Image 1: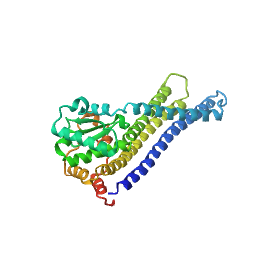
Image 2: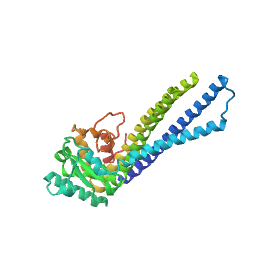
Image 3: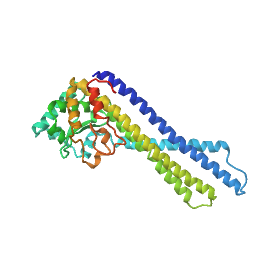
Image 4: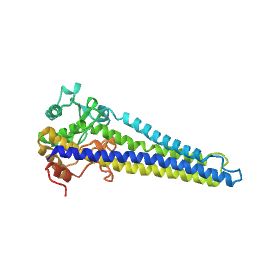
Length: 334
């Protein structure tokens, strides 16, 4: 395969998808601002209809409210995003949350032959990729064949494979799998995936906005019935916007993840110069071997694994195995 061409293609497509995320964020903030503007306008109309006098709020003030609502909504989404971002930055903590046992450091003194081979492969890939050696973990309660890398930069990165991978993969296959994970580290895919997942989580801030609007609508105070209904309808509309942004955000998250999987496959070929190792691991999964990870934390980290760790296919973060094998063979997509 022409791994450099595949790397360039995946990077271009990722930039497009991240741009769509920014548009989705702006659309969500503008929608909430528009609903605030509509609510204030209806409130003024209701006040005038009750005979309380003409509308006292200048048009400029309602547009100022739009700007404030849009800005606060966008800012709230960004704050929630940043919170999520920084809680997923350390690779070792992520590996430990999935039941990982560390093989490096103090754990490196008493390794089985399969574990020693795995650590040696990691050292080889660190040299091939010109990256510092990450912390090395094994998920020794997982029988499925899988692996992942975590951490937002090479200095806090960790690589983990399942016990099933150690038991069922040859050395060449394991090297291809580990090289794929080093590809994620080298291409900053982990940082990107953490950012994208945090952005999707950030859209859940809209549910807090909807809840606040709902309580204001049903709260105490003398309000016109039409205004009260309008506020409740606005809360429902914001909740709907939240659902839609999370839904489409997860679709875009899956699309970004699929492109980065292709990029990591191409990087694995670059590091090993032997595409058949990773291809053979793919063919074992295609032949019926399980990649499932049983840990309760696996669903949230599904995008980080080499293969699907389980969960619904609607938001599949991994390309079809046939397409990945085809690209490793250098064949054009049908």
